Image (cartoon, rainbow, N blue to C red; front, side):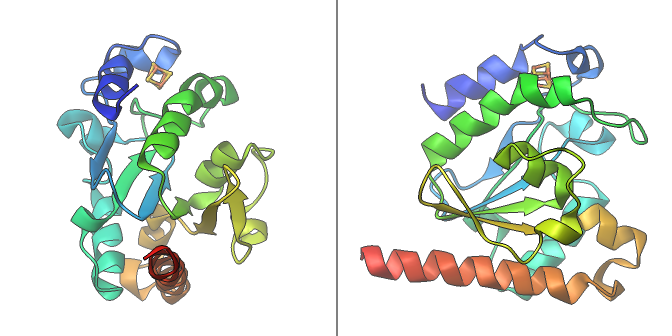
Length: 194
Ligand code: SF4
């Protein structure tokens, strides 16, 4: 099944309660052949209006991070673990994640990136099938493998950075370092395969 067909399926999906608040399904943006995939957790109000991931304040912070490592958002594939928006302040239910995760698995399978950067604990836990209460502090700094050969680099979510000053947050540089590390893996693996 191709990405556009999966996108159409997600846009009309009613497998969990979140479809009732959906204005536009939020599937992905960027390069379908990217070496780096970036996975957040769930779209917010801005994404619900526009139908693209990371177009709100967290998206601006993500753009800053990408500029700092000297790549464009067109060079990466950006998505979320859950495709329909959630109102701010409402905790994610495990049943919503379980209902939606097959879309993400299909995206990973078809894009087949070299590295996945997971933003925050929820996205990391959802992708890796870890207990949802596993904290980002325990996940960050440990590289995992997914589908045998894809590297997974967990880092902090841009929303967390925004709450502490964005680019001035004490952990902003750590996130840039994590993205730089992921880029290095991607470039190294590309070189090996050349
Ligand atoms: Fe379907 Fe995912 Fe939307 Fe739930 S969040 S309705 S599983 S597309």
